[in-house]
Every structure is written in structure tokens, then in C-alpha cells.
Amino acid sequence: MNKKMLDFSSYDEFFGERIFPKFLLFSYIGLFLSIIYLPFDYSVYKDTPYLIGTLTARSFAVFFAIMVVLASKLDYFSKKRVLAIAIFGTLGYSSLTFSYISYNAPSFFIIINWFFYLVATMMLGALMTKKIFIYMESFQILIVLVLMIYFKKSQEDLFLYFIVASSLIIYVYAVISLNRKNGEEFYKNAYYMYVTSSLDGLSGLLNRRSWYEKAQKIYELKDNVSFFMLDIDFFKKINDNYGHDTGDVVIRKVSDILLEQTREQDIVGRLGGEEFGVLLVNSQLEEVINIAKRIRETVEKEIISHNNHTINVTVSIGISIKNENLKDFKEFIKSADLNLYKAKESGRNKIIYI
Image (cartoon, rainbow, N blue to C red; front, side):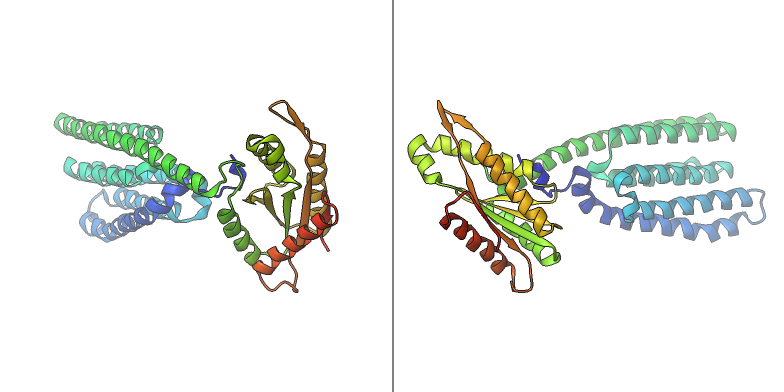
């Protein structure tokens, strides 16, 4: 399978495109609530010894809420977005928990805050891993229990918190596990459908439709683009003399050589029958010709064995370079096709690029 040419999203990218826009909205709500509580806390605790500690904790909560928003939005966090959100969200929740416990707020406040936190966790859906969740919740429970014991909360409050928190964690863990399992299955099916619709079943290269779509996009975006069209010489005779099974072996062998001799950024496809196309990006004419020569020489030297038959095949190649004389992608392809025709007419096993 030609995975190097597939541009299907990774698991995190696939679900991130669907989940993070909604999660970002939820993050804005959390940030808004964190900010509006600042003046409320000040008005309630301005004449008490809890004022500085409460405002400090609330300010930290606002800061980490901002970081959650940034982690949901900025490309800087793209590689570890879920982990960053989990860390900032956990620290933000811990800051709020400290403020609630320190000024002796009812346990109900702590549980509501915890519930909001778990809802945010569940919104990450298939992106949240069980490992990250366990680390997050273990840290949360430890922080809350230490604070409750330090501030001498009653045994009833400790018991209530432990029962409610444990029940919620078990439920959310089950939801996360199911989401992850369903997400992986959904992703696997989506990837399979993409592969089967994009790749040629015999060669493993991009099929004609997918190749043309990708090649045209690149052609329209970049100036330094080259293309060569390749055809296996006398392929019909191979099928007639040795059978279609042997012909299929030849197709696969030439496809493998094309992948081996081209670069990661090059777009390789089977355009139909024994015809192949290679789009080369950021290449000078000399480099394009050298790649074409390597392919032609490698194919010529390759000994293909199948069903007690030993076959040597050759290829003809026509090259096209993007320039101002070619008005569009269609003419760009036609130019290579014309040069391929010249290569075959001049004796085959040749490269034409003029």
C-alpha cells in the first residue's frame, strides 16, 4: 500500500477537526464564568481574611482557563493538544477547589465545579485517552482530599465528596472507554473507505481520479512543478504471451520501482493499464531527467520471474515542465503525453523532454 502519498488525517487530526470547535466554545464559557466571578468574590470577601487567597486562586483559575482556550485553538499545541488541555484544565480546577475549600464553601460547590470539569472531559470524546484521564482524576482526588483534611472539613463532607466523586469518575471512565473504542473503530472504517477509493487495487499507487485531483491542486499552487508520463513497452505482448497474471506481476514490479526511485513529496499514480504518472515538486529539469533515467535503467535491469517465465521489460517516458507556454494543467499533461508518444515512436525505452 502506497501510504506515503495518502494525505488522510491522523486519528487525532481526524477527530480534532470535529471536536475542538465545539470544545473551544465550551472553553470560552468556562473562561467567561471564571472572569465574572472575580468581582463577585471581591464583593463577598472584601472584609474577610479570605479575600487575598480567594482572589489569587480565582486569578489562577482565569489564567488556566485562558490557557485551555489557547491550547484548543493554537497550532503550537497541535501535537499534544489533549494533554495540554488536560494539564491546564486540571490546574484551573485545582485553583477553584482551593478557593472553595479555603473559605469554607459548601461541598455542593465543589461537586458542581467537579461536574463542570467532567463534562469538559467528556466533550473531548474519542480524543481523551484512559491513561490521561486516570492521571487527571488521581491528581484531582489527591488535591481535594489533602485540602479538605488541611482545612478540617467534616467527615460528612469528606464522605459525600468521596462517594459522589468516585461515582462520577467510574461513570465518566466508562463513557471515555466506550468513546475511544467506538472512535478507533470509526476511524479504521473511514480510513479503509478512503484507501479503497483512492488507491489502485493492483499497483497500490494512487488511482487515476485521486492522482489527477492531487496533481492539479499542486500544479495550481506551485510554479516549480514537473511531470513525466511512463508507459511499459509492448505490454500487450506480455499479456498475450505470458498471461494476465504475469502482466499483473509486471505492473506491481514497475510500481515498486517508481516508489523506490521517487521522493517523498512526489505524487505517483497509475493512470490506466500500463500507463503511470509522476508529478515532481521543487525539481530542476536536470534532477527530473536524472530521476527518469534511474527509473528507466532500473526497470531495464530488473529480471521479473513468474510461472517459470523470466521477463525483461522496458519503459518509455515523456517529460513536461511547467512554463508560461502551457496555459493550464490540461496542456501540462498533454505535453508529457506528446513526448511519451515521441519516445515510443523513436524506438521505445527512451526519455523525451523537449
